[in-house]
Length: 284
Image (cartoon, rainbow, N blue to C red; front, side):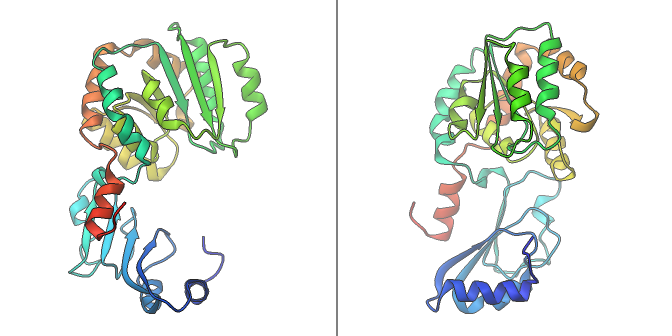
């Protein structure tokens, strides 16, 4: 969180910002609300708030919630001023430009679905080491992959153990804190992922996926994506076993990949940053 109360943080932010008001202040923090935003009024002309909880009031000019959840158009009623522009839904997802740049080639390649290359990414940290459980499931499965990309972050707690587990997979490559995620996702035929912000990256590239929910905040989006046919949501990661992963890997069909690609690609095209900048009047 903030490490202090909101009022102290507001004072510190004023000092850090200096005397000249900025054109736009962009805020993305669950511990900040209308009180902090009002206190900072002297340092900005307009305010953009990024939120996805809809559990507190804001005094912003623009509110961005890039998620796909039930009744999203009504979530912020009474929580933002009447003149506030609400940018709601995955079309405004803030993805790096390379996802949109690779979209066309990725979708074209998926017109002929294959099951040769698998991507595994259970979040940068993956404190519960769901990655190793998935790797064990891949070993148990009958389906064999020509190549497997396993991605973890620098904070992953079991890198050495994972390296040993992958030693028996000559077709597997371990990527630690990669800066090339878009290319890896575009190259993959299918992925096993968590249900976080990677959701919108997969949509931009039409990447079919099996999804393990790793937190309460991921549940609404993962459920909605499954209902939309954009991914296969397996359930809570804590309840999944290697055998469960093996079962889904062995039973997924090529026609399911095609359906997931089409549904996912319709949700988000990866141009959210350009859309937001255009709306707030800033040239990229």
